[in-house]
Length: 333
Image (spheres, rainbow, N blue to C red):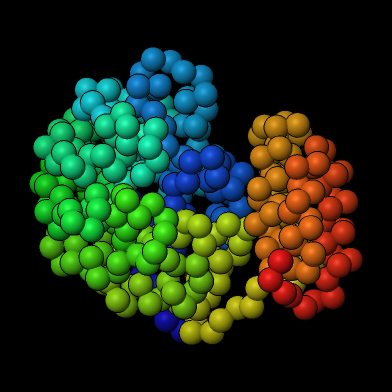
């Protein structure tokens, strides 16, 4: 049996299996807890607006809540002004985050248009000011999530990473795509490896990891301290258990059968409804339902009906329909 070991970010020890990426409107508390139950070694919150927190937005404050079962966990801030990100970092103290992460990689136009997210890749001086102000106000390690550059003509991952390290960051997460790629094309693991060689703080690799073998490959290819999985966890929280098992034993665990998939999906729904109420919870489970049934017989037709799911019983009936339509064989839905 292989020992998976740990990576240390500041004073926080994290098992070197796989972490769950911060994903806005996806990785909420219920989603994170599902992944944690299957062994995700580290979790990061959805993006939290620094200005929203400072100005007392109630929805923003809700994003800061940490369930004790989620630890070790980071709260992720975004913002374009150092003074606001710093003040927000100080305001996170009552929530006791293990780590504060700063988003410098989000490619969404609404975020970039305000000068935050991956827009900061074009303004390293401002990015460094944000990190310094956050480190000064945070009572825990501060990390940064970034991309390899703005576009293929402006790949500055190594230079940017060195500046962020010098500003006081305790670790970096590098998504191996440019901002203009969004989530298309192939993640450039070579660039992640270059950053790893260039800095003396832990580097977390992110991009194009959706199974245990790919996770091991990223560790080997980049030398990163930790691997982060985002879209590869959609409807597949068990991927974290598969990663851990493979890294420890060298043996691949199969995906669960259709009955187990639906049991896990309903467990996910129970958590979501418990946190948000049945009406909102089931509304938000519609896209999760579509992810859980991907590849199963009848998935295309059932995805089309997901908008009709309004109650937990609707979802349970849909799960039974999925089970009835599948006899253990799978096809692309």
